[in-house]
Image 1: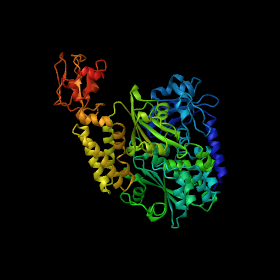
Image 2: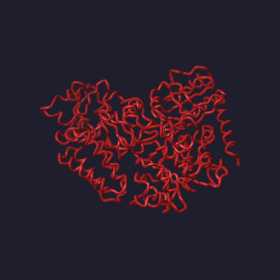
Image 3: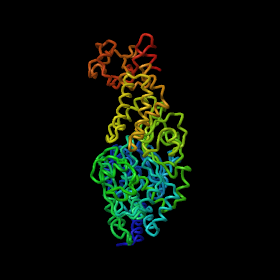
Image 4: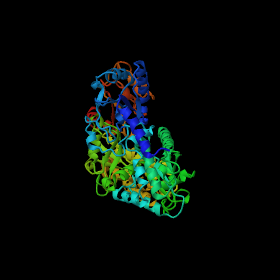
Length: 635
């Protein structure tokens, strides 16, 4: 078995060989593949072979710029590293001829030039978002081959493990305490406290579990990390096992993440072959093994006791605490359970020290926060920012603002259990305490941006519907209370609501929070509570005026054809209406029979943009006392 120094030297040699020549990076995480990255790889392979060019293609993970996929970077020694966004297969020959084989960087196709690339965070100076970001967890993502352990080692990987094995367990946990790291799974519990409790627990064996059960709608941070840099999580878990005295670990990952599972399996095999896993790690007496436990997709499995039950092969249902998993977890033995991102920080904290990490962020929230940007934002994807960064900076400076020049309405943070915050709160800092005070939560980092076309009552209904369906049913208030709240919201969105329903929702929300065992039930009412707190006027409009201002709720929306804009010869809407609700012969103005209309919206989709004759209105707009439909549509 080679020494670590020999392993590192060999890895650096391979890395330097790559860096000293021309090479191509292509993002092939799930987001890149969905955008056609594998087709781009295939065309690059064929084009390079046709030209007899021996240029390596490195299939990297996700840079976080998901809106730019397929994302390609061409690196040339002594020249610019150029990034290209939304690369189509038919543009590949131009890139190969222009920059791989020649000196033309094809700037008309470029997103920008790349800085960094020496093991530190890389950035694109032309994109101002990178001025706001601080990439710690994401430092290697989109830069190294996640299926080549040598790339990770050459950029400092497993150096923290070597250092940790020369430290005492108490010293490692002491650095974790100095860092101020709080668990990134959502609750924000101090990481060192869990580790210390596990270390002191007398029972054996002990276990380490990585929670990669990422079930929040719109969240994909853990998937990106595991697909792009799995070794940083594995290294963090090994250090944790050494610190608490565990010999076995499990990565509990959603079965809906097949690429993540595949790349973890490759990483685990390589780590075993290199001597970072198994017996006598790096020549020490310490041994540690990691297995994958694939989850079945239940949202409640993200709760730690429900997750432990799933790993044991039982139904994912939470259990009362205490005892806590640190004392009695997997198979009733002491178990350390942390999130993907929490373990990802550990090698950096060991390598650079707790004081370094605690210098980043705010007083009560140290380090960085990673968020997915989804919804009505221009630059969807992934971002990592220092704690204390404002929501406005995240949405506008990093996310590029609201798509299609629409008006910002709300941002939902923390997954389905988070809260919906209005424009007035865009300048609050992102940290555990500030978000909790606003009625939301950090959660695991899912963020969905909503604009003027979103109905906040319907948004609350959507998230509560998710939580209701994902409830394990163990607690009466979670099982029945969330269902009753959902039915009230359905009545309101259908125009059947009463003003007293708002007080009923508040009362039910408190009962559900108090009567639920786990975090799913305790936080399920958050979307309702925050929308009532910040968007009560929309609830009242639904109830008192039978009006949905965003024209989203089907029962409070009608489709109408503006006579002055209807092209009499056009038949698009008539031919595509599934219920034959649109009347009018060729040469006549078309009308919609509201009794037959199923409100599918097909007529709006097919109406030629040069006419824009079909509009969505509130039913009250068609009353004689209202403004004309044209005036209402303009409004």
